[in-house]
Amino acid sequence: MNKIDEMALLCGEGYVTGKDYILISDPKQSAQLNLVTVPKDSTVLTQKGCLERPSGGEVFVTNPDRSSGSWISAQSKDRVVLEPLAASRLPSACNSVVHGDGRGFTLGFDVDSGSKNKSMQTVAVHLRSVTSDEVIASWDARGLEKTLAFEFNAAKPVLSGEYKLMAVIKDDLSGAVSQSQCLLRLDYSELLVSPAEKINTRRKYNGVEVLVVQPGYNVNFYVHEGFRDVSIEYCLKKVSFSDVREILDPTVIKCDKPIDFLRSKSESLEDGFWVLNYRGQRGLVQNIWQHSFFLVENLCAGNIDSVESLRGRNCTVIRGNMDLADLTEENAFLLDMIGEVYGDITLRFSEAKSLKILNSLSQMVGNISIHYNSAETFDGFNTLRYLQGTIALSENQNLAYLNILQDLEIITGSLEISSPNILSEITPFKSLHSVQLQVMLSSLPLKSFKIFPVLRKVKHLALFQLGLIDMECFSALTDYKSFAFGNNPQFRSFKGIGSGPKLMDD
Figure 1: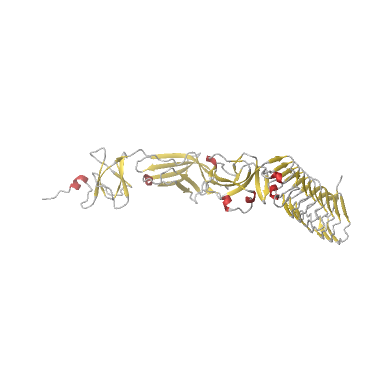
Figure 2: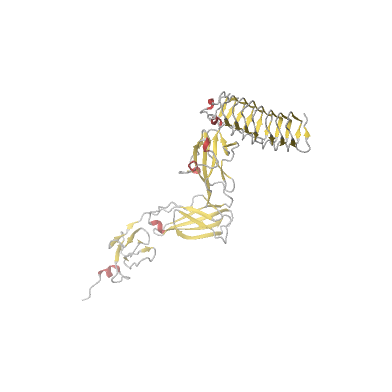
């Protein structure tokens, strides 16, 4: 008597004796069960819905209308009822504008990286002309990821401009299809991003250019070339004066949690120094991190009667006279932030042995008087470029080294230095090219004199009692009214006064 194989009856055509099958049933209890597998033909499926047990991995089984389905693996039970399928939600490829460059572009997708269904979703992309609808480039369907890069064929470059981007996303499990269309902007220009479009005031602090803004300034950026809608991320950190330098401490520019400029409220600056770290991205091109320093302007009005009165005020602009009689090496830092002075500065009776002051001062309207101080070395005013007034130094009996006004270009008044008994070196006033009134140097024990290399114009020039042996200076001087030179008993040689001098009119 022949034994009947019950599985052969249940599974129907395609059943092979000896193989392990899983019996699949539809929740609708359909008499004719027509099933498909995804990936297609990934395993044997008999006429009546028996699936050869997978040897490894998983197979998705569904009915033709994709209303129900289940994942089947080697560990599945002998009988499986398909489960109803929820409507598939496919992500959009783009919403409005996508940016790219000569290499290509990227698309982002809102997909669940842990979902099994994601492995069955694909996207195909076509690029068309905006005017003619001609296909410019195509990319075949590929598996969906959170981010996909689409590169251009180097042999068929795509010109800079705007194109229609068409993306078709398919879900092989549910059969759902999603189509997206947006604008692709290809921009081959160099990506240059800088903070703000118009910040007119810039000063140097510790040799570094600093952008000076008003309180309440909101962080903003400027894209120099090409399409302006560039994504920018940044970090903003308040820093001290000593942090402002050419080579930064890595902790100053570290950016742990960047802010998306386009998707967040712009931060504002209220006082002090700040460092802004930022970078831009357009398509596949991303800048390296860059940084800029900011200083929030703080106007202090009224006369300053002592250095100590500045403590805690963070003044950057002074409108009033400054009397620095109490200046010491310890409190000189209170002058570090001052960038502009509209008034006279008087430094007198200071007991400090070495002074380095006001090397951030860039604009001065007033007179500078430095008298009766004990300093042996003096370094100051070296970022000042324009002095609308007079500077005078006298009776600084211990002064041996003088380094001042190295960036100064124009003095509308006079420059007068006299009386130190031991002054042996003056740095050369390397940028000064015009003094509208007088340059007077007197009673200085200088043996050699090589200063004022670019001075072209001065009304009166006077050199008295200098102890000079050699003088080599004023080689660029062509415009002057008078030149007085006397009582220099050790004087031996003179090289100076530019050729063809022109006497100035009154």
